[in-house]
Length: 89
Image (cartoon, rainbow, N blue to C red; front, side, top):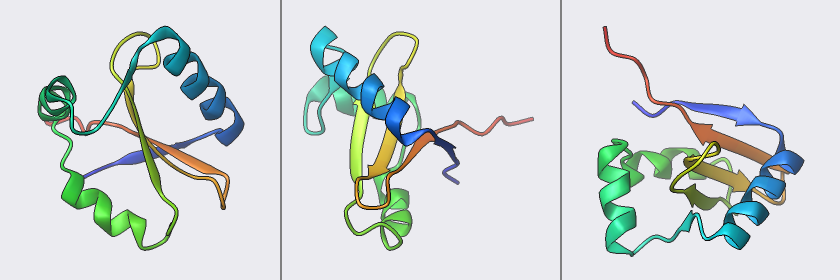
């Protein structure tokens, strides 16, 4: 099950800008991105459920560093969520 934590929209835009400039942004379709998604156990089919509430949903992946993670955001609703892996006990 995918778990997302809401984060501040404006702060996320700054993170995305920094990741773009520093070359840490990963793009869907790249082999290294596919490997990263598998390593993080992110199933894009599960994202489809969330997208029904956010028709303009976009994905942003930061592949390394302090802000590393899988983000989804909506510009229309000014909302951003970051994937949080569920802990297994």
